[in-house]
Image (cartoon, rainbow, N blue to C red; front, side):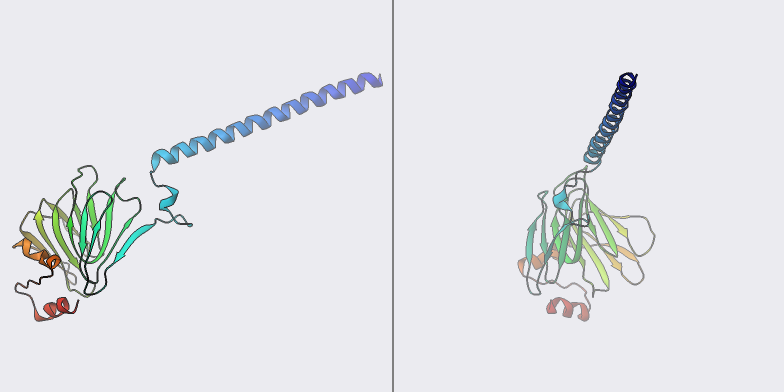
Length: 220
């Protein structure tokens, strides 16, 4: 009878142990499947790689600072080029060109943007956002300037006011936009746009500008 009870106990323990292991295996398999599904979801939902994030998960940027009295030409990953004027700063994420083409500018730059109708090119500043598909233009917005100025040479640009709510403003070649940083007023007018970027050839061109603004350019 003792042997019979012992045999029954062994059988019960074996079955119980087998069920426990089986349940653990099912739970483990489900967890692995969930992890794999999560990894697939992340890979499909984003193309950002670990190399484009810092240790805290924030986006990493390339940043270029131009000393006073200097100029710098940058070739962006999509083939677009930017010539930065004295005292300017340009930064863009390491993921630039994949799902977006956003850059952040302080100062002045002349841009020749490669055309891409699926991924617009954007310049972001506190006062003004500029969006294009492919074009040539000059953008100026120094912190100590009272105005933001955009001159368009080729293509078409859309401008969004960051100071006050209003419809987007569009420029066509040989037009310029001046945004007053205090009032938020945007004024579009005709111009000789090619004169706006003669600074890339170490020239200065002044057209009905205040002496104060001329002095700022000379200082830079």
